[in-house]
Length: 126
Image (cartoon, rainbow, N blue to C red; front, side, top):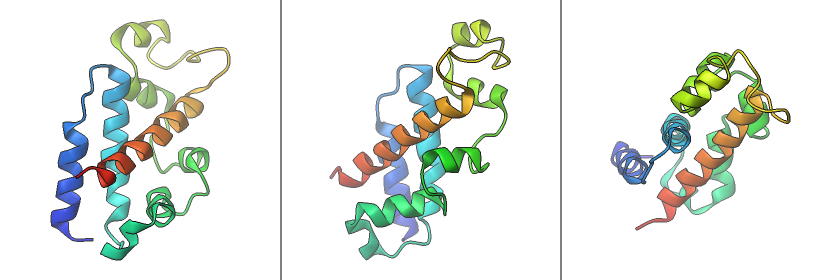
């Protein structure tokens, strides 16, 4: 992929409205995983399955990507990337579980899935 196209996608992703800590964190993840597209040929961008496979960087899904250390690995880092100041206080900066039903890897996996959707939206917007 040409550097110009990557810069265009970065610009589109940065232009998305992000009012909450969560949406800003998802945008940051989208910009991070965008780097995985550097090796794609321009024709590959017509197939979302090829693009998503490149975004996953060898992982089978976003959980495996997250658990495999392709993203943040420490609970405190994940919390800092995705939580508002009040949520950080409630979770003691990621030392406590984010909820009864999720751990921090679950939260990051959900954010990565949304980040991939953001990349797709940036690819489709013209």
